Length: 246
Length: 249
Image (cartoon, rainbow over all chains, first blue to last red):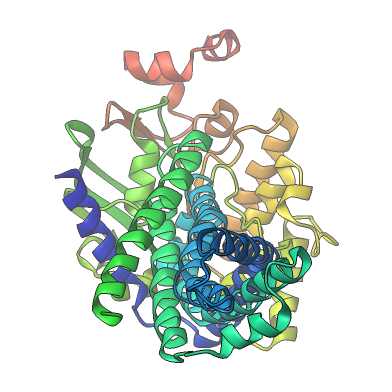
């Protein structure tokens, strides 16, 4: 019953986002600001994670695929495909669910408990539309680009780790990267990221928007936002993989 | 110009917060809603501005039935409402200038210079010049309240709601805020409703006092009549302190 209540309220919340904006130019401005905040603000952590993810992936692949039957450039193939298909879109988005999701939930939660959202509503502004819609649109537009960068950086990290440790030289790594590359994988990853971006922003905004109480409840909303975003990302990852890759 | 509250009921779960509340607020008077903590006065104000939906009854703004309107229809009335919240409710991410300009940016067709002039006029009116670029976190409690008043009057409202405007302020600043609200009410000819439990405000400014107790209107009158009321709950609330008891004697 409790779950049904939240699903119903989430749907009503989503419907409320798409009422006619009060002033479209203000929304455009907000979208640009949110793109900078969500995209540029998450670049550092995303790149850092990707470098190490790619490096670890390469070293572990070497460790697991030591066989005279497996060509050494297969390590690069494994690294490339794992980074593009799963690690960059899913793992980085899980990290972003923590960073961006908790930030959105706590920001909206604080605005709710300090009556800032009430102040917007009294002015006649569609508060959910003004506060949430730009975040959702911004994330859906900017995160695919961010993830594309993390793909390059992740593969670069793998190449670097292979070269530095001498496990796979640059020539073999490059050969592996170009071997049997399917561009659909990038499309698939981008579709996943757009869906994940929607989940992170909308679920976190929902949690923050309906916060009741004080500082403690803002913290709880933030935690719930991260937990539910992560669970839904993993679930959607499975659904999309089943639908689009098989 | 008047706001009529007609037989409204509001409950949260099993708890009945407002029960058959009927009251009329008119322009030109300092309308005060008073009552103890948990009496339902904040809920009444929030029902009146549409932050809470009433279970039953009507809120009527100058013959316009606010309770029956949908979001779009209410938008017009809401643009005629200014509200000063208890904590100010200033937008943390915006500086003072942008806080006051917010409504103008959203709804007016004024040029940037005209909006800036309006902001400066409002800030001058609340005696806060040269704070345009400060953020809410850099303001004192009294300054926040004054900026909140400036934001509330920026859109030239017809109706001004103040939810405990002098809570958390020292007595001197409280009087400054009270006087400011009174001056603004008379100067701009608006209908003002103040939700308070500040006895100084009640005694000094209460031209129309509505006392709410246990979710019902318990007493209505003026500040001159409060000394002659024969109502235990009301007297216990108003004359709770020694100084107020002395004043009554």
